[in-house]
Length: 154
Image 1 (cartoon, helix red, strand yellow):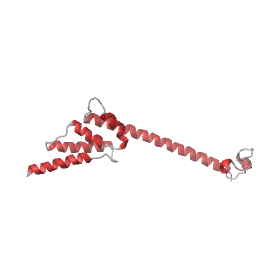
Image 2: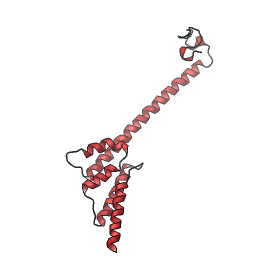
Image 3: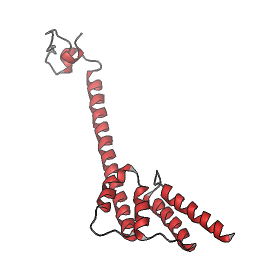
Image 4: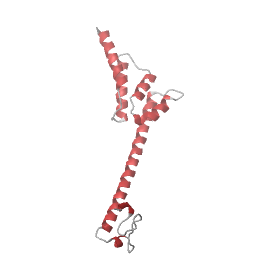
């Protein structure tokens, strides 16, 4: 009776580790989850070997990790879980830093664009077409009529 339950538990844990995905959780939490399942298998005398642990870990990663996953799979010498853990944590840190820098650039660009638009609106709100460009008269490049530019040509 006990052997049957043990076999079911082994199958349940192996299926759990096979289906375990990183999803939206942090890399640290994901790796802790993988390791916890692996440890449970070891406790019931069915440990995963390093290669299987690494394969399950790589298989559960999201698409943003596909490049590092491919690089790690193609190594001459197989990677051990401890080294994989370190590399994935480093990759996540670098990835988040790059994403934050990209977000900062977009945010800065939006502010600059908004400031330019506000400046243009404020300078042109109550002025005539000739005052908008200093004392030059605006003439449409398309129809040669004064008071507007080609972009706003009617």
